[in-house]
Image (spheres, rainbow, N blue to C red):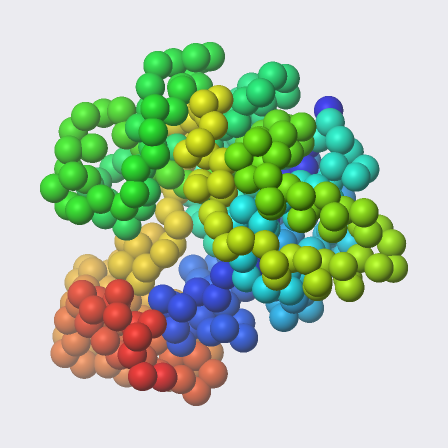
Length: 346
């Protein structure tokens, strides 16, 4: 049974403006100053899992050229262009129906393009365990993260009884909690952060969508009649935008009773906020984190500065601030106000 990796790369990263813009969003940016974009780091992380010809990227039609440039080893036919943003269920269905055409017995990992993992070796071990578990039977595994703090920015998985070694049955999924509830989750010991990484075989996910999202499955069946023909682009452009906007969580994960989780402890972050990025980067004695070779701080504390393209940045007296410069756009705001960045006048 072959393994395939599906990378979801269609988001616009609005919370990371101006580093991330609708024209060139976060997943294609060297967020960590590592010399690689987030999607390049994701592909590198999964290289031990399967060969490059089994990697798939689902992205916006407007980002296809960026994907081609950044990931030249992935077959062009495996870069799937969404003509409209329809959330994760249609995105995932498109890739899985496409894989099914040539590899109906495939085992699949679905991952976001823009998460960070510190320990790639342990990450691949956990993914391998999940793949082994989903090779037979009607089983879907979602990767859970052992929480290290009462985080209010993530959804949670309530983990039940152990089924097979590390793998546990999922009791329920929980939305992002308030701080008090997040503290209760942390104290209980059986709640995991939801990483949005899924493992299943093709027959399981296709049948699950037929059962729980029949309208979506019907549209995918109609689309798939054109796959690998010269009509494909036109048919996808006609049908895909008519799919309901729905997440895979609502479409399948919260309805099926054969959902499992495997807890992971490999230094994961969704890098979803400037605050989370601040914790991932090296910090100086005053708690400042920098990306950029010509950044000079004077009497600053607790700041994150992201200016890799700037010829020179000099700051004085700032505390707990975000400073970002990219392509002539400059943002300076309090870290405590970062959730409002997407609403600020730009």
